[in-house]
Image (cartoon, rainbow, N blue to C red):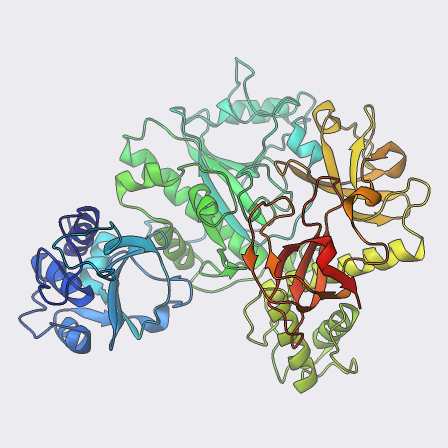
Length: 616
């Protein structure tokens, strides 16, 4: 075990043992304060920081650097922890110290919570928790040992490219392939199967009528039990699989287009990473063969690096606070997926974390955010240039046009990024929950595109009087008739017709339905209005006529809610706000999703009661 792993594991063990508590009077064991805990475990691991004077936060940096630590603050994102390694020392020189333990978590001695008795009386005096920015003044890393314990991948050259993509075996017979929709790609999400079967043929088979079926079966192998995922009965689907081909070679097989919404991680309290994250499964073995683990790990890093280059994804980036690269368990921790343990139950056996994944992917692509020509030309996922004050040209004109269309006054469309465009962009970022940096990057462009599309849908609905023939408008709850067909001509599966769905947009006879009312599914598929039965009843919901998505309203309430059906809310202030969504289900308790308008006096950012909303 390396010295870094020794002191990190020791700190976690102390946090898990309630015989150790927080104390500044008796701080060198068994109780500790923040700095003595870090100094003691590092010193006990054979790194003599106390000999060189480390005793409190004010002198730790100098002593730690003398003992082989390096200041790596410039390579880390202090806001979300991206770029940090397990064992990094987090230091605020005046007030606090902690140890980063990987996977978005840290360990620290935090507070006595008023207890004077030895030991941890609450279980929270010394603990592990999600990473946060204290704020930290510097990040210190024991470089030599860290590099020895986390070697770079043995294959650092890009395996895949646009001219050499992964093996393709589209599974067009699955329900997911036939019922999903396209998405704007924001990142990559890793899964592992949880089953002792490393062979890809267990899950992947070509279509019965595929022109290259025989060739693919020779490569992948034939599933004699027909329990693969290429069947209409399967209600899940991924973009790719990693495992063994028939000859034992470890590789990737793509099974859906990369920009198709996967049915992979499910939904959490805040939404789902199914919308925006390409997802793949790694076929597990019995979890005891390190050579197989190393092979699939490197293959997964290669695939992720390829996708990062293809779609211009920053391995250390995030979208609305969600890392661009994460795993299924991470999605649950962020409220964006169901509670599955993959991939950590496997990774922990071999000392790997998702931080290692991000570092290894960045190493493969050269630590750069690379945008390929196909990504630039991909109309379903436009990669916009990063714009800031001083930028000029057609891209700036497009930004100004879209800000104006969304209701944010960017001034004349002159193609010059000046103070008025900056002010409009910063207000937009603030109201949409984005990082307010005045820079139009991928995250800002993605949200702006969606807001503009929603605004256009609203205007189209207004101009046509909604869908008068069907009596359907945005936000309505509908059921789909049995025997219905999507606009593509494919028949809608019976299980979809058994559920109720929320209308996302209305354009003439073209209706796009989004999430199911039960919150478990999302299909975003266009369908003819004639196949829909409207279940909404505005007279029983309290939804007011004349208020539409995108409108500015007066909010007079003092509580907002996480969801339209959530029973308990949190306090907020009233004032001016923008309507971001309307949930028209008869049972909706809080049908309006509001976001505060800058300067309007409110801080609302959630679902609210209809009685608290009035049109301006």
